[in-house]
Length: 462
Ligand SMILES: *Cc1c(COP(=O)(O)O)cnc(C)c1O
Image (cartoon, rainbow, N blue to C red; front, side, top):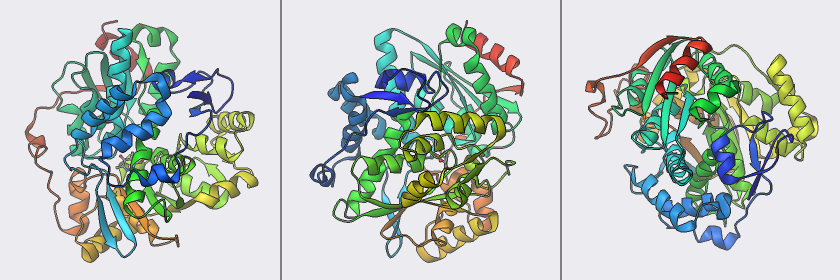
Protein backbone atom coordinates (compact mmCIF):
# COMPACT_ATOMS: atom_id res chain seq x y z
CA UNK A 1 0.00 0.00 0.00
CA UNK A 2 1.45 3.38 -1.06
CA UNK A 3 0.50 6.75 0.38
CA UNK A 4 0.27 9.94 -1.67
CA UNK A 5 0.17 13.53 -0.46
CA UNK A 6 -3.06 15.51 -0.85
CA UNK A 7 -0.93 18.32 -2.33
CA UNK A 8 0.71 16.11 -4.92
CA UNK A 9 4.25 17.51 -4.60
CA UNK A 10 5.81 14.75 -2.47
CA UNK A 11 6.70 11.25 -3.67
CA UNK A 12 4.49 8.34 -2.61
CA UNK A 13 5.75 6.48 0.47
CA UNK A 14 4.96 3.23 2.26
CA UNK A 15 2.81 2.83 5.38
CA UNK A 16 5.69 3.03 7.88
CA UNK A 17 7.14 6.19 6.36
CA UNK A 18 3.70 7.81 6.18
CA UNK A 19 3.10 7.04 9.86
CA UNK A 20 6.50 8.22 11.12
CA UNK A 21 6.38 11.40 9.03
CA UNK A 22 2.86 12.53 9.95
CA UNK A 23 2.74 15.50 7.57
CA UNK A 24 4.05 15.08 4.00
CA UNK A 25 7.07 17.26 3.06
CA UNK A 26 4.90 19.39 0.73
CA UNK A 27 2.62 20.28 3.66
CA UNK A 28 -0.11 17.87 2.53
CA UNK A 29 -1.61 14.88 4.33
CA UNK A 30 -0.93 11.29 3.36
CA UNK A 31 -3.79 9.23 2.01
CA UNK A 32 -3.75 5.72 0.50
CA UNK A 33 -3.21 5.65 -3.26
CA UNK A 34 -6.31 3.43 -3.49
CA UNK A 35 -8.81 2.41 -0.79
CA UNK A 36 -8.52 -1.20 0.32
CA UNK A 37 -11.94 -2.90 0.35
CA UNK A 38 -13.71 -5.76 2.09
CA UNK A 39 -16.47 -7.83 0.52
CA UNK A 40 -19.89 -7.94 2.19
CA UNK A 41 -19.11 -11.50 3.29
CA UNK A 42 -15.86 -10.37 4.93
CA UNK A 43 -17.69 -7.56 6.74
CA UNK A 44 -20.44 -9.93 7.87
CA UNK A 45 -17.67 -12.16 9.22
CA UNK A 46 -16.62 -9.42 11.70
CA UNK A 47 -19.83 -10.03 13.66
CA UNK A 48 -19.08 -11.46 17.07
CA UNK A 49 -15.30 -11.31 16.58
CA UNK A 50 -13.15 -9.87 19.38
CA UNK A 51 -12.40 -6.18 18.78
CA UNK A 52 -8.66 -6.75 18.43
CA UNK A 53 -9.21 -9.20 15.59
CA UNK A 54 -11.32 -6.72 13.62
CA UNK A 55 -8.67 -4.07 14.36
CA UNK A 56 -5.91 -6.30 12.96
CA UNK A 57 -7.95 -6.90 9.79
CA UNK A 58 -8.78 -3.22 9.21
CA UNK A 59 -5.37 -1.77 10.11
CA UNK A 60 -3.67 -4.65 8.28
CA UNK A 61 -5.46 -3.62 5.09
CA UNK A 62 -3.57 -0.29 5.32
CA UNK A 63 -0.23 -1.63 6.55
CA UNK A 64 -0.05 -4.20 3.74
CA UNK A 65 3.11 -6.27 3.99
CA UNK A 66 5.09 -3.63 5.89
CA UNK A 67 4.04 -5.00 9.27
CA UNK A 68 3.92 -8.82 9.52
CA UNK A 69 0.36 -9.99 10.19
CA UNK A 70 1.25 -11.94 13.32
CA UNK A 71 3.14 -8.97 14.82
CA UNK A 72 0.19 -6.66 14.08
CA UNK A 73 -2.27 -9.15 15.58
CA UNK A 74 -0.19 -9.24 18.77
CA UNK A 75 0.04 -5.43 18.91
CA UNK A 76 -3.74 -5.16 18.56
CA UNK A 77 -4.28 -7.79 21.25
CA UNK A 78 -2.04 -5.86 23.68
CA UNK A 79 -3.39 -2.43 22.73
CA UNK A 80 -7.02 -3.30 23.34
CA UNK A 81 -6.29 -5.33 26.48
CA UNK A 82 -5.59 -1.95 28.15
CA UNK A 83 -9.33 -1.14 27.84
CA UNK A 84 -11.48 -1.73 30.90
CA UNK A 85 -14.41 -3.22 28.96
CA UNK A 86 -14.32 -6.65 27.35
CA UNK A 87 -16.12 -5.31 24.27
CA UNK A 88 -13.55 -2.42 24.05
CA UNK A 89 -16.11 0.00 22.47
CA UNK A 90 -19.48 -1.29 23.76
CA UNK A 91 -22.83 -0.07 22.42
CA UNK A 92 -25.45 1.32 24.78
CA UNK A 93 -28.99 2.09 23.63
CA UNK A 94 -30.31 5.62 24.21
CA UNK A 95 -33.63 5.48 22.34
CA UNK A 96 -35.35 3.39 19.66
CA UNK A 97 -32.87 3.32 16.75
CA UNK A 98 -30.32 5.46 18.66
CA UNK A 99 -27.24 3.86 20.13
CA UNK A 100 -24.08 5.18 21.72
CA UNK A 101 -20.66 3.63 21.15
CA UNK A 102 -18.65 4.16 24.32
CA UNK A 103 -15.15 4.87 23.09
CA UNK A 104 -13.81 5.96 26.48
CA UNK A 105 -12.87 2.76 28.30
CA UNK A 106 -9.14 3.19 27.59
CA UNK A 107 -6.43 4.36 30.02
CA UNK A 108 -7.08 8.12 29.68
CA UNK A 109 -10.89 7.86 29.40
CA UNK A 110 -11.15 9.47 25.95
CA UNK A 111 -11.49 8.01 22.47
CA UNK A 112 -7.96 9.15 21.61
CA UNK A 113 -6.76 6.01 23.43
CA UNK A 114 -8.26 3.78 20.72
CA UNK A 115 -5.75 5.02 18.16
CA UNK A 116 -2.88 6.00 20.44
CA UNK A 117 -2.55 2.57 22.08
CA UNK A 118 -1.97 0.88 18.74
CA UNK A 119 0.14 3.76 17.40
CA UNK A 120 2.58 3.46 20.33
CA UNK A 121 3.03 -0.24 19.60
CA UNK A 122 3.58 0.44 15.91
CA UNK A 123 6.26 3.01 16.80
CA UNK A 124 7.95 0.59 19.20
CA UNK A 125 7.99 -2.14 16.59
CA UNK A 126 9.35 0.02 13.77
CA UNK A 127 11.81 2.14 15.80
CA UNK A 128 13.12 -0.94 17.61
CA UNK A 129 13.90 -2.51 14.23
CA UNK A 130 15.59 0.66 13.03
CA UNK A 131 17.42 1.13 16.33
CA UNK A 132 16.15 4.65 16.50
CA UNK A 133 14.88 6.95 19.27
CA UNK A 134 12.35 9.61 18.28
CA UNK A 135 10.98 12.64 20.10
CA UNK A 136 7.24 13.05 19.81
CA UNK A 137 6.14 16.64 20.19
CA UNK A 138 2.42 17.11 20.54
CA UNK A 139 0.07 19.99 21.22
CA UNK A 140 -3.10 19.01 23.02
CA UNK A 141 -6.51 20.61 23.43
CA UNK A 142 -6.97 18.25 26.35
CA UNK A 143 -7.21 14.58 25.43
CA UNK A 144 -4.46 13.84 22.91
CA UNK A 145 -1.76 14.60 25.48
CA UNK A 146 -3.14 12.25 28.11
CA UNK A 147 -3.66 9.48 25.57
CA UNK A 148 -0.14 9.96 24.17
CA UNK A 149 1.44 9.96 27.63
CA UNK A 150 -0.46 6.82 28.64
CA UNK A 151 0.47 5.05 25.41
CA UNK A 152 4.15 6.05 25.14
CA UNK A 153 5.25 6.26 28.79
CA UNK A 154 8.12 3.98 29.65
CA UNK A 155 8.82 3.04 26.01
CA UNK A 156 12.49 2.79 25.08
CA UNK A 157 12.46 4.23 21.57
CA UNK A 158 10.34 7.31 22.14
CA UNK A 159 10.33 10.44 24.27
CA UNK A 160 7.16 12.51 24.54
CA UNK A 161 6.82 16.25 25.06
CA UNK A 162 3.19 17.34 25.48
CA UNK A 163 2.30 21.04 25.25
CA UNK A 164 -0.99 22.12 26.75
CA UNK A 165 -2.61 25.56 27.12
CA UNK A 166 -2.35 26.45 30.79
CA UNK A 167 -5.73 26.83 32.49
CA UNK A 168 -7.71 25.85 29.39
CA UNK A 169 -8.10 22.13 29.98
CA UNK A 170 -9.87 20.34 32.81
CA UNK A 171 -7.94 19.27 35.89
CA UNK A 172 -8.63 15.60 35.16
CA UNK A 173 -7.37 16.04 31.59
CA UNK A 174 -4.20 17.71 32.93
CA UNK A 175 -3.59 15.04 35.54
CA UNK A 176 -3.69 12.23 32.98
CA UNK A 177 -0.59 13.88 31.48
CA UNK A 178 1.24 15.30 34.43
CA UNK A 179 1.11 12.39 36.88
CA UNK A 180 3.10 9.93 34.75
CA UNK A 181 6.37 9.38 36.64
CA UNK A 182 8.27 8.05 33.61
CA UNK A 183 11.52 9.74 32.59
CA UNK A 184 10.63 9.67 28.87
CA UNK A 185 7.65 11.99 29.41
CA UNK A 186 7.70 15.80 29.73
CA UNK A 187 4.65 18.04 30.00
CA UNK A 188 4.68 21.78 29.41
CA UNK A 189 2.00 24.25 30.46
CA UNK A 190 2.16 26.96 27.82
CA UNK A 191 0.83 30.41 28.69
CA UNK A 192 -1.39 30.67 25.61
CA UNK A 193 -4.17 28.91 23.68
CA UNK A 194 -4.26 25.51 21.98
CA UNK A 195 -3.74 27.29 18.66
CA UNK A 196 -0.54 28.84 20.11
CA UNK A 197 0.66 25.38 21.13
CA UNK A 198 -0.12 23.99 17.69
CA UNK A 199 1.68 26.88 15.99
CA UNK A 200 4.78 26.23 18.13
CA UNK A 201 4.73 22.55 17.16
CA UNK A 202 4.53 23.55 13.48
CA UNK A 203 7.50 25.89 13.90
CA UNK A 204 9.48 23.15 15.61
CA UNK A 205 8.77 20.83 12.67
CA UNK A 206 9.96 23.49 10.23
CA UNK A 207 13.29 23.80 12.06
CA UNK A 208 15.34 21.22 10.14
CA UNK A 209 18.26 21.34 12.59
CA UNK A 210 16.00 20.61 15.55
CA UNK A 211 14.12 17.96 13.61
CA UNK A 212 17.31 16.06 12.96
CA UNK A 213 18.91 16.65 16.36
CA UNK A 214 16.00 15.14 18.29
CA UNK A 215 14.44 12.99 15.49
CA UNK A 216 11.11 14.76 15.78
CA UNK A 217 7.84 12.93 15.15
CA UNK A 218 4.15 13.82 15.48
CA UNK A 219 1.11 11.86 16.59
CA UNK A 220 -1.66 14.42 16.06
CA UNK A 221 -4.78 13.42 14.25
CA UNK A 222 -3.33 13.95 10.78
CA UNK A 223 -1.32 10.76 11.31
CA UNK A 224 -2.97 8.25 8.99
CA UNK A 225 -2.48 5.32 11.38
CA UNK A 226 -4.83 7.08 13.80
CA UNK A 227 -7.51 7.37 11.13
CA UNK A 228 -7.11 3.69 10.21
CA UNK A 229 -7.42 2.67 13.88
CA UNK A 230 -10.55 4.80 14.26
CA UNK A 231 -12.24 3.17 11.28
CA UNK A 232 -12.37 -0.06 13.31
CA UNK A 233 -15.21 0.90 15.66
CA UNK A 234 -17.37 1.98 12.72
CA UNK A 235 -17.14 -1.63 11.56
CA UNK A 236 -17.74 -3.25 14.95
CA UNK A 237 -20.67 -0.93 15.79
CA UNK A 238 -22.36 -1.20 12.38
CA UNK A 239 -22.00 -4.96 12.22
CA UNK A 240 -23.55 -5.30 15.68
CA UNK A 241 -26.58 -3.37 14.37
CA UNK A 242 -27.09 -5.41 11.23
CA UNK A 243 -24.55 -4.21 8.66
CA UNK A 244 -23.72 -5.09 5.96
CA UNK A 245 -27.34 -6.20 5.48
CA UNK A 246 -28.63 -2.75 6.43
CA UNK A 247 -26.90 0.65 6.43
CA UNK A 248 -26.14 2.48 9.65
CA UNK A 249 -25.68 6.23 10.31
CA UNK A 250 -23.22 7.86 12.71
CA UNK A 251 -23.16 11.10 14.66
CA UNK A 252 -19.69 12.33 15.60
CA UNK A 253 -18.56 15.08 17.98
CA UNK A 254 -15.93 16.79 15.84
CA UNK A 255 -12.97 19.14 16.08
CA UNK A 256 -10.07 18.23 13.83
CA UNK A 257 -12.37 15.99 11.74
CA UNK A 258 -10.23 12.88 12.23
CA UNK A 259 -12.94 10.80 13.83
CA UNK A 260 -15.69 11.63 11.33
CA UNK A 261 -13.27 11.17 8.43
CA UNK A 262 -12.52 7.67 9.75
CA UNK A 263 -16.19 6.91 9.10
CA UNK A 264 -15.79 8.03 5.51
CA UNK A 265 -12.79 5.70 5.27
CA UNK A 266 -14.84 2.78 6.61
CA UNK A 267 -17.48 3.49 3.97
CA UNK A 268 -14.85 3.55 1.20
CA UNK A 269 -13.72 0.15 2.47
CA UNK A 270 -17.20 -1.21 1.81
CA UNK A 271 -19.14 -0.59 5.04
CA UNK A 272 -22.67 0.61 4.22
CA UNK A 273 -22.92 3.95 6.07
CA UNK A 274 -26.02 6.00 5.29
CA UNK A 275 -25.05 9.41 6.72
CA UNK A 276 -22.46 10.90 9.08
CA UNK A 277 -23.55 13.86 11.20
CA UNK A 278 -20.59 16.15 11.93
CA UNK A 279 -21.48 17.74 15.27
CA UNK A 280 -19.46 20.75 16.41
CA UNK A 281 -19.74 23.10 19.36
CA UNK A 282 -19.92 26.85 18.78
CA UNK A 283 -16.54 26.60 17.03
CA UNK A 284 -18.54 25.56 14.01
CA UNK A 285 -16.23 26.12 11.04
CA UNK A 286 -16.76 22.52 9.92
CA UNK A 287 -20.52 22.47 10.37
CA UNK A 288 -20.67 25.73 8.43
CA UNK A 289 -18.61 24.27 5.59
CA UNK A 290 -21.12 21.48 5.02
CA UNK A 291 -24.04 23.87 5.33
CA UNK A 292 -22.80 26.70 3.14
CA UNK A 293 -19.68 25.52 1.30
CA UNK A 294 -17.62 28.23 2.97
CA UNK A 295 -14.88 26.92 5.25
CA UNK A 296 -13.78 29.99 7.17
CA UNK A 297 -11.74 30.33 10.34
CA UNK A 298 -13.10 32.51 13.16
CA UNK A 299 -12.20 33.34 16.75
CA UNK A 300 -11.83 30.35 19.06
CA UNK A 301 -14.51 30.28 21.81
CA UNK A 302 -13.92 28.40 25.06
CA UNK A 303 -16.72 25.85 25.62
CA UNK A 304 -17.64 22.94 27.90
CA UNK A 305 -16.27 20.63 25.19
CA UNK A 306 -12.68 21.93 25.04
CA UNK A 307 -11.30 19.09 22.90
CA UNK A 308 -13.39 20.56 20.06
CA UNK A 309 -12.41 24.21 20.55
CA UNK A 310 -10.66 24.20 17.19
CA UNK A 311 -10.99 26.51 14.20
CA UNK A 312 -8.89 24.60 11.72
CA UNK A 313 -10.03 21.03 11.10
CA UNK A 314 -6.84 19.54 9.62
CA UNK A 315 -8.47 16.40 8.21
CA UNK A 316 -10.91 18.41 6.11
CA UNK A 317 -8.07 18.58 3.58
CA UNK A 318 -8.35 14.83 3.06
CA UNK A 319 -12.07 15.07 2.36
CA UNK A 320 -11.57 18.02 0.02
CA UNK A 321 -9.01 15.98 -1.93
CA UNK A 322 -11.45 13.08 -2.21
CA UNK A 323 -14.46 15.22 -3.08
CA UNK A 324 -12.60 17.03 -5.86
CA UNK A 325 -11.80 13.67 -7.46
CA UNK A 326 -8.30 13.70 -5.94
CA UNK A 327 -7.35 17.00 -7.54
CA UNK A 328 -4.02 17.63 -5.76
CA UNK A 329 -3.43 20.98 -7.48
CA UNK A 330 -6.82 22.30 -6.38
CA UNK A 331 -6.27 20.94 -2.87
CA UNK A 332 -2.83 22.56 -2.57
CA UNK A 333 -4.19 25.87 -3.80
CA UNK A 334 -7.18 25.77 -1.45
CA UNK A 335 -5.27 24.88 1.71
CA UNK A 336 -2.25 27.09 1.04
CA UNK A 337 -4.84 29.82 0.57
CA UNK A 338 -6.50 28.85 3.85
CA UNK A 339 -3.19 29.21 5.70
CA UNK A 340 -2.76 32.65 4.22
CA UNK A 341 -6.28 34.09 4.46
CA UNK A 342 -8.32 31.70 6.60
CA UNK A 343 -11.06 30.74 4.13
CA UNK A 344 -11.92 28.29 1.38
CA UNK A 345 -14.95 28.23 -0.90
CA UNK A 346 -15.63 24.57 -1.62
CA UNK A 347 -16.43 24.14 -5.35
CA UNK A 348 -20.15 23.27 -5.79
CA UNK A 349 -19.54 19.83 -7.31
CA UNK A 350 -17.24 18.87 -4.43
CA UNK A 351 -19.71 20.23 -1.89
CA UNK A 352 -22.50 18.13 -3.40
CA UNK A 353 -20.28 15.04 -3.08
CA UNK A 354 -19.49 15.82 0.56
CA UNK A 355 -23.17 16.29 1.33
CA UNK A 356 -24.05 12.84 0.05
CA UNK A 357 -22.40 11.53 3.21
CA UNK A 358 -21.98 14.40 5.65
CA UNK A 359 -24.34 16.81 7.34
CA UNK A 360 -22.95 19.47 9.68
CA UNK A 361 -24.61 20.83 12.83
CA UNK A 362 -23.19 23.43 15.26
CA UNK A 363 -24.47 23.27 18.85
CA UNK A 364 -24.36 26.06 21.45
CA UNK A 365 -23.64 25.72 25.17
CA UNK A 366 -27.27 25.81 26.31
CA UNK A 367 -28.28 23.03 23.97
CA UNK A 368 -25.26 20.99 25.06
CA UNK A 369 -26.34 21.31 28.68
CA UNK A 370 -29.93 20.39 27.79
CA UNK A 371 -28.74 17.26 26.00
CA UNK A 372 -26.87 16.09 29.13
CA UNK A 373 -30.02 16.46 31.21
CA UNK A 374 -32.39 14.99 28.60
CA UNK A 375 -30.17 11.95 28.04
CA UNK A 376 -30.01 11.34 31.76
CA UNK A 377 -33.80 11.63 32.04
CA UNK A 378 -34.62 9.34 29.13
CA UNK A 379 -31.89 6.70 29.37
CA UNK A 380 -30.18 7.03 32.74
CA UNK A 381 -26.83 7.65 31.00
CA UNK A 382 -24.65 10.49 32.28
CA UNK A 383 -22.82 11.71 29.18
CA UNK A 384 -19.88 14.10 28.82
CA UNK A 385 -20.21 17.50 27.08
CA UNK A 386 -18.57 16.33 23.82
CA UNK A 387 -20.99 13.44 23.50
CA UNK A 388 -23.81 15.83 24.43
CA UNK A 389 -22.94 18.04 21.46
CA UNK A 390 -23.54 15.04 19.22
CA UNK A 391 -26.75 14.01 20.95
CA UNK A 392 -28.10 17.53 20.56
CA UNK A 393 -27.04 17.71 16.90
CA UNK A 394 -28.82 14.44 16.16
CA UNK A 395 -32.07 15.98 17.42
CA UNK A 396 -31.84 18.61 14.69
CA UNK A 397 -31.36 16.44 11.62
CA UNK A 398 -33.23 13.63 9.98
CA UNK A 399 -30.95 10.72 9.17
CA UNK A 400 -31.92 7.12 8.46
CA UNK A 401 -31.58 4.83 11.49
CA UNK A 402 -30.16 3.02 13.22
CA UNK A 403 -27.80 5.78 14.31
CA UNK A 404 -24.69 5.40 16.43
CA UNK A 405 -23.56 8.43 18.45
CA UNK A 406 -19.85 8.23 19.17
CA UNK A 407 -19.28 8.90 22.86
CA UNK A 408 -15.77 10.31 22.89
CA UNK A 409 -15.05 10.91 26.58
CA UNK A 410 -16.04 9.68 30.03
CA UNK A 411 -18.16 12.22 31.92
CA UNK A 412 -15.69 12.09 34.83
CA UNK A 413 -13.12 13.92 32.67
CA UNK A 414 -15.34 17.01 33.00
CA UNK A 415 -16.79 16.64 36.50
CA UNK A 416 -17.40 20.35 37.22
CA UNK A 417 -19.41 21.12 34.09
CA UNK A 418 -21.34 17.85 34.18
CA UNK A 419 -22.21 18.34 37.86
CA UNK A 420 -23.23 21.95 37.34
CA UNK A 421 -25.63 20.96 34.58
CA UNK A 422 -27.00 17.65 35.86
CA UNK A 423 -26.60 17.83 39.63
CA UNK A 424 -24.67 14.55 39.57
CA UNK A 425 -20.90 14.30 39.97
CA UNK A 426 -19.56 11.60 37.67
CA UNK A 427 -17.10 9.27 39.37
CA UNK A 428 -13.77 8.20 37.91
CA UNK A 429 -13.67 4.48 37.25
CA UNK A 430 -11.62 2.17 39.43
CA UNK A 431 -7.98 2.42 38.48
CA UNK A 432 -8.15 6.17 37.96
CA UNK A 433 -9.92 6.96 41.24
CA UNK A 434 -6.68 8.06 42.96
CA UNK A 435 -5.76 10.48 40.14
CA UNK A 436 -6.32 13.58 42.27
CA UNK A 437 -3.80 12.36 44.84
CA UNK A 438 -0.94 11.53 42.47
CA UNK A 439 1.98 13.99 42.37
CA UNK A 440 2.13 16.19 39.28
CA UNK A 441 5.20 17.11 37.30
CA UNK A 442 5.24 19.78 34.60
CA UNK A 443 7.14 22.79 33.36
CA UNK A 444 5.63 26.27 32.81
CA UNK A 445 6.87 28.08 29.71
CA UNK A 446 5.82 31.16 27.73
CA UNK A 447 4.22 30.70 24.30
CA UNK A 448 7.52 31.35 22.53
CA UNK A 449 8.72 28.90 19.93
CA UNK A 450 12.43 29.49 20.64
CA UNK A 451 12.05 28.84 24.38
CA UNK A 452 10.09 25.66 23.81
CA UNK A 453 12.41 24.42 21.09
CA UNK A 454 15.36 24.89 23.46
CA UNK A 455 13.46 22.96 26.14
CA UNK A 456 12.80 20.08 23.72
CA UNK A 457 16.47 19.98 22.75
CA UNK A 458 17.60 19.80 26.37
CA UNK A 459 14.99 17.18 27.27
CA UNK A 460 16.14 15.02 24.35
CA UNK A 461 19.77 15.44 25.45
CA UNK A 462 20.66 16.85 22.05
C1 LIG B 1 -10.41 14.95 20.12
C2 LIG B 1 -11.77 14.88 20.62
C3 LIG B 1 -12.89 15.12 19.79
C4 LIG B 1 -12.74 15.56 18.36
O1 LIG B 1 -12.23 14.56 17.50
P1 LIG B 1 -11.64 14.97 16.06
O2 LIG B 1 -11.09 13.71 15.54
O3 LIG B 1 -10.56 15.99 16.37
O4 LIG B 1 -12.74 15.54 15.27
C5 LIG B 1 -14.15 14.94 20.31
N1 LIG B 1 -14.34 14.59 21.60
C6 LIG B 1 -13.30 14.37 22.44
C7 LIG B 1 -13.57 14.02 23.84
C8 LIG B 1 -11.99 14.49 21.98
O5 LIG B 1 -10.96 14.27 22.81
